[in-house]
Length: 159
Image (cartoon, rainbow, N blue to C red; front, side, top):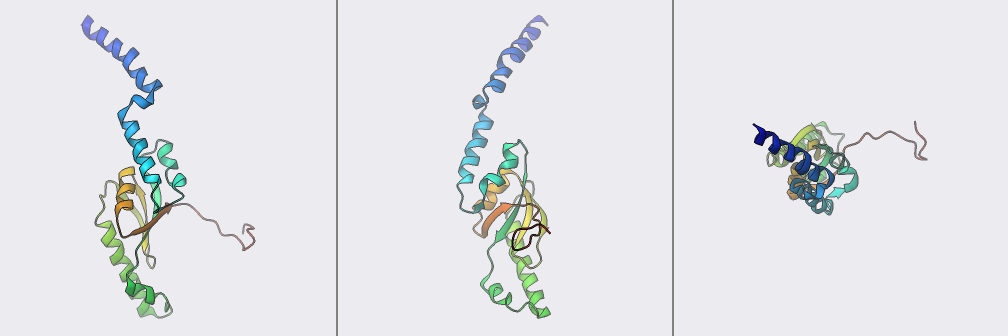
């Protein structure tokens, strides 16, 4: 019993403070920082510092908007949105493109919060690994932070 108490005391007072006062010793922190440094250099990220802000605060996830590649057929459809049939075709093309990307992702790493109707993309909450998976996907064009945008007049005066 005394040996166990001594062992616990040594652990609490000597080993744990090493990881608290010297976080660089912790292998998981180093690995996370290294992954973030690699991912921040991706040209697919729009304002990487803003995307990684939640991770730097210690959160496990962040919210992003993902733009995906448009099929060639869909590019010509967007010129005639007054036609209801064209709208239906465009919506179907967007859903198909979204499903092609979403089906390649791990649902534990990427939680889709809003698939868009006529836009080739979706909003999602992602972990660091989920963000990495999105960056590695060839159909993902760019990723940006999901944020609230307020309407302004052309001169920048709030409405």
